[in-house]
Amino acid sequence: METIKDRLRATSIYCHLPFCKSKCPYCDFNSIAIDDPRQLEEIEATYLDAVLRELKDISTDESILAVRQPPSSVYFGGGTPSLMSPRFFETLLSAIEDQVGRLDNTEITIEANPDSIDLNKLREYRKLGINRLSIGIQSLNDRDLKVLGRPHTAKEAIDAFKAARKAGFENISIDLIFALPDQSLGEWEAVLKEAASLEAEHISIYGLTIEEGTPFMASKERGEIKPSPEALEIEMYERAVEQLTKHGYTRYEISNFAMPSRESRHNSGYWTGRDYIGLGAGAHSYVSSPDFGKRYWNTSDVAEYITATARLERVAGQELLTKEEAMTEALMVGLRLTKGISIDDFKARFGVTPMELLDYEKLLSLNTLEVPEGQLRLTDKGILLSNEIFKTISP
View (tube, rainbow, N blue to C red):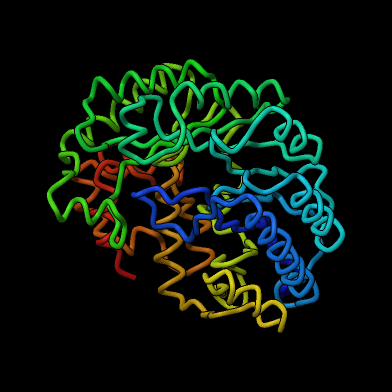
């Protein structure tokens, strides 16, 4: 009989650092702007103490860490994690090694903005064992960067990338956003070509989404900006696939492209259903037992989070997933991967095939699904229609 110790446990750690110099007008992430260096230094120390308390509390929780094993990945996201000092990461990584497991073979990623890193800081990060850098470049067109409210120029982004190489980073990811207001296909193609020339190991592309409650939404409602036409957005996505493939990248997830063996280990864990622990304000966690899994999360308010960890009340909410919820989630995230979902593995876990959750025959006839070698996956056409397909999933 399978026991809790036989299951895949605590293979990833995510730490949310919600601090930025300024808030971008399109951003709806859990982040707060702090432009005073002294204030940032003070909140860094207080926040570090809170995260360390949370980690210690988690490390004694048998229901979460049933088996001590080295994490497969550690990911510092935000916000702008690179605003934090090297000492912050040194202290936290040391605590993770002490309380969870050695990090000798762990993928350790830090997100950074071009204006928040320099050669000295990057060298310090590498000395600490941080081996993957994700740079929020977003565009290599200065007009686009102004539209997005980014505080850096295209040249500064390229300089930051070159500094990372000089500091010894051999695994760099860059983020790009397309379908911006008034952006042309030619402008996007020029950004793609310049980005590919940097030879980053990984590139993520995202179509701009105008979210509720953001300054961008207010501008849209006032008629100051207009979303990119859907047909143009599709053409931009297809052009990105074409250009990045030509430069040696493989699309392994709808929005993510990598050089051989450079897929994001951490994000792949989300898409394949691995357990993960979330540290910090607003962080979410998932463990695959009991039954069909449990999800829990922290309060997103930084002050409340710090106070809660002092009382060892780190969990703001939690839920046990039903079989139906777990199946739906596994199908949606699994189909984001271009390799798709193992039909046998899905049936072994849930007792049904993933096809039974879809209008399979219809989607097959529309050439949006295919089943090569026991894998259910989206075709190129299906990827373009993925949001509509996901809406039809019915357990």
